[in-house]
Length: 604
Image 1 (tube, rainbow, N blue to C red):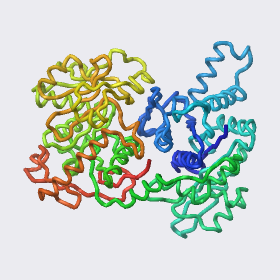
Image 2 (image 1 turned 90 degrees about the vertical axis):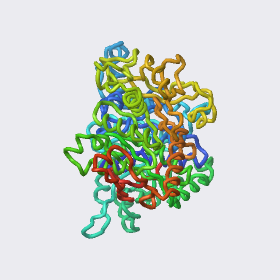
Image 3 (image 1 turned 30 degrees about the vertical axis):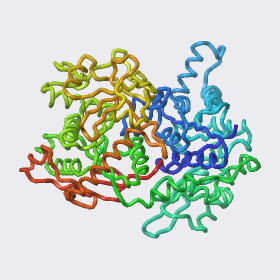
Image 4 (image 1 turned 90 degrees about the horizontal axis):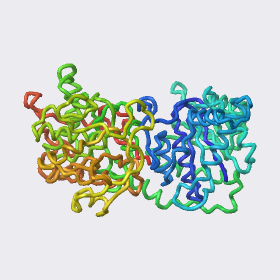
């Protein structure tokens, strides 16, 4: 087994995950099978109990593992299916060592960080690297390991010591270290500064790890003299100093590495030159170039409570991107804070209220993603109501499905107090209830997690057709609450159709609204299995319906702009003295969600 370790220096957020994924793609293109491991030095056992504001989205694997979002990058880039053990945390390592100590496995020895913790880390890496993740038999050829955090962080020290020992143990021809660092450009003088990277590499060497390649993040390509200075002071060959400059979308990163012959440097270090093929990027290049040429757009309103942090919905964004590329459309996401749609915001901040409704009414489709807690639920319910009443394509994921059911019960069944017991434990009409097998005392890993099977109940439903008329599908789940099976008959009589159920027939998985252009809710998270070139069927259905709505709006002459924004007809318009609201186009080159329409990064 060959190992490639990716570390980061100077600051966090440089793109180690994308770099590690791109290296994996590069090695795959050279004919090698690749697996990946992400090391997170936090004490949490997994990412499941952390707020998205702390750590971005929680990515869920087939085996139910709640892991770091970078494992989602690995799965999308490399088209693999990882396991929970591919995400190593300090919590997992210490837990395993303490369990061994309690069993008496250490035979009375004093248990210490060195050698017991460091040995456990090395053993974990060796064991997990042997697990096939690409559907083929036998272990992969190369394991790409990403060490989270920044060199110098105190919590990373046991892992750095373990990896230093590991590199010695497996031998220099089986270990390659790629250090991702920052080369900032000072706006005052416009000069690229190498000192931060020099200090980072010096610190890395002092900890027992020697970089073979430097991947330097900078706003522009490194000057030759800057590369020469880095080679001289960091003791890295000039040919092994790579530029990771800003690109239109992250699909370019593997191509950027290939153009700088990063694969040759890695293969030389790992002594794989004799068995490697020339990198084949035909499909990757085609996808990247096609995306860059799109002019026609499609607007999707993302209604959630974490709209200030795009990483909270990273997989949803990528799934939307995969689907929009399949329909040759440039994706524009309008970030709509759910709370801003509510009446209280109209009283307290009329401008935010107007902007939120303007964005919602200007979108070609609406998506309400998963979430927990009651903040913003009223706004999400209003979004579902608007989509249902105005024939706007709607996709509700997990909580988004539950919201759609609650809204339908209130508006159509005439049950104003219909609710989820998550938000109102005493509701007289519990449309959504706590699952019987769930735990109310422990949070971590106690939800319904991982891949579960859904059986289609209606053969000619939109969902079944999107999945190729399959009789069943396997999708990943992450929820504690479910639609109340005792209310299904009442809801279906009134017009909802629960077209997908689990093997018992009592747990609702997919709901549709017959007669609506596209109104689907899924209890599972289809975004986790979406891939470039193989978009999630439900996301494809949403984008297709949104494109059709955009064209219909333009053909009827109701467009307010080149983006085909339609005239509003929602209750919000009436609240504004009956005046129609025009959607803000927002910034088309924004890099973070701010309530405006933005082009989403075209990354994997």
